[in-house]
Amino acid sequence: MNGAPPSPDHGRDDRSVLLVLSHLRWDFVFQRPQHLMTRAAGSHEVVFLEEPLFEDGAEPCLDRLERPGGVTVLRPILSHGLSREIAVAAQRALLETVLTERAGRPLVAWFYSPMFMAVAGQIAADVIVYDCMDELSAFRGAAPEMIEMERRLLARADLVFTGGRSLYEAKKDRHASVRCFPSSIDVKHFGQARAARPEPESLRRIARPRIGFFGVVDERMDLDLVAELAALRPKLQLCMIGPVVKIDPAALPQAANIHWLGARSYAELPGYLAHWDIGFMPFALNESTRFISPTKTPEFLAAGLPVVSTAVTDVVRDYGAPGLVEIADDAREMAEKADLLLQRPKEAWRARVDAKLAGDSWDRTWERMAALIRDVRRMGAGASLAMTARAAGASHV
Image (cartoon, rainbow, N blue to C red):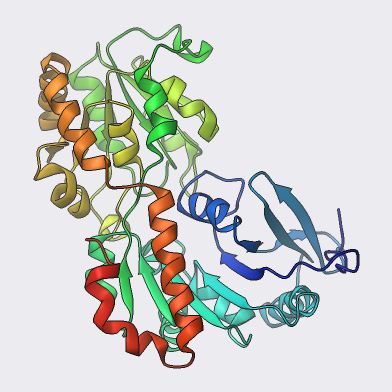
């Protein structure tokens, strides 16, 4: 375990500092924060501060991890048993050390969770960004003070980015400068699934046809639907990739044709998708999925996989309405749509998919975000208000 990052006496880094405050751990799954911050690291020193880990008898310190792409991950280590007030004070002190070492350089504070206002709400940043991926207050186990913390963050933020149209509509009247940046796509990475690739060892024992899911398995998944689909189509093999979080693994439905394969790395995903016949997104329709815009939707499509999903609002509007993704209201309809997709020719559909994805990339998304940040820095205080007239040009919904 390392202490706080060493003082940069051996050569000053004059790049802007991008301080990311994230409830999602860098090494958990590769998603929006990782896509954006590896690109941001080309022009900023990206410091990714996570929530603390707790160890018996630990003195407050920062574990420093250098990650590929030029991102420095900092994990506060605190002792078990601290009161919330003392834990927050310890994190503030550790953060102050990080900022002192970078004093005099432009600072962008990038919040993924309003709960970091307790730790970082007092810092003097040149630009404050709230990148709202999800409606975290609707998630299982959300802190009661989440809504108040978000109110405080919105009052301080210069820019608010949302991860989909539904979130944009929920936030657009709460701040003067809200921009919609839906989930984007690394076409080159997932496009590898369209070419011949070795079959992963864990798939070789599984018959075909295969319908697959990848992502976090949590309260957003409709486990009853998964069980019902497996029962309705016993020859259809359900391949489920991802870590299980916030639900009891014993609650996962079990059947001869349901295969819980565990977590896989981002690099491995194209190899799995290359050997599936259909992608599916069995999301429950509840408060935790009301505003989601799943990143995996364009990732499935870039891989060339037909997709069937439950009626998540952003999926219906952005992909279902144009006929790129099939939408099912229940397990029976999902089984029928799967039958259809297994028989449907893919050539014309893939051409429409490629036309849809051609304008989307994480590179482009980051470039547009970075341009807005530069505008705020140039224009100074009140910039977000002055930029409101540019909202239509900067947002894509």
